[in-house]
Length: 490
Image (cartoon, rainbow, N blue to C red; front, side, top):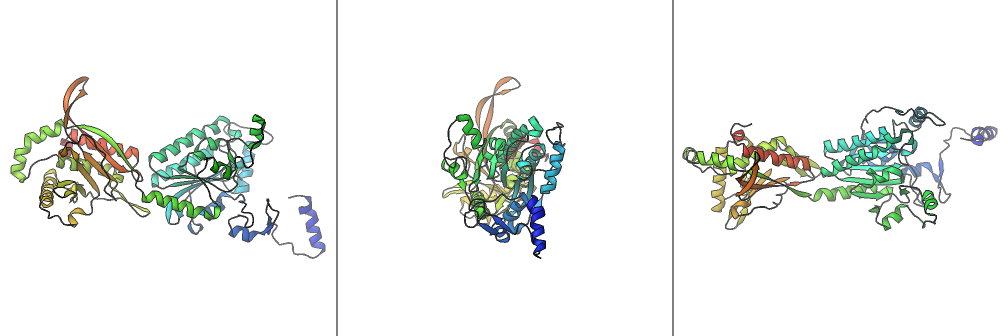
């Protein structure tokens, strides 16, 4: 506010008997064309100037209101951190600058995390507010960004990040720079979990954030005309002593040169991001992890009791009963491998219906052993025997092959040493068994020959992250190498 606004204009209005309760920001001037735009019309257009398409800066709260369905969202509490850890002083104390920024924006720092839906899809959204000290990255902002990643991981939701920053916060020195690798690790964890990470680059996105989380998205979307780059054009020109091309470091220039994936108007962001997320959901991201298991203990147990077992239960003791039991134990510990995607929902099952691939003259069929987690090894073998006979006789019903939550395939019966089993949609996991083969292994510092089998777990990376997949396969291996655990239900 200046002297004319504070004194001259009110005086003239008073002399002329004009109303003085009219809002000062009733009209807004387009910084590009000079056109005056009615504030309410501009707000209804998400602060995009209709005639020029110029995207005005908006607050983080406005961003969330425009982005979420019906403008409804839940704000997350960000971690509390020490303020002014370096006791920084320049012309004004850092704590006073923070106090002014909080009063100006109503925020605790430059980052807001929120939960909500976009076109019905549940997401976590992280927004930087440039009005809070230029959206600069300090300890509080770094912790808030990492917290957003953690919430996305816990809830298995995509994360959308709106970047708007001038870079690191100088008042926090090296502590500010340390946020760059911290947030980068957060991105890595999100990607390991197979969760989409979409970054929207708004005006301006500069400094250290462009050397870390802001440029590590699966998809980079820029708003029109946004300034994006590590250093500003003036600094670059002074450094290289050359004139930069027109539009350098603007969204359109960067898209032409492959630095961003698309330039999208703010008015179309919701629909564009929702479409990309739905495309990601409709396509299973199948990965496979491998391990090997020493079959000595299972083979010894089978050899010792197979005759007694068959005499008592009327069915042969095969390997599939042990594998099925080992799988059900592992599913209880890693329930995501037993889950499935249904539209926008992830459904976790509290039961284990195990599909067992059976070869017939007409091809491979996958009948289902229902509630296998409630069965003993003998009960599992009986049911597999029943289903196997029905399959070979062509008497399997449709119901016999529906409702499986996890599948076991045994390529070993055909001599396969290693394969990548294909997911049986909509299941999120399938275990591949293979041929048992004597191989030299190191046991207790000695090279010995053991009957070994390679195991392969293919999984849907949208639901199951790498750590869960590896842990699941290790648990199966542990149960098979110590089969007494299966008998005792340990």
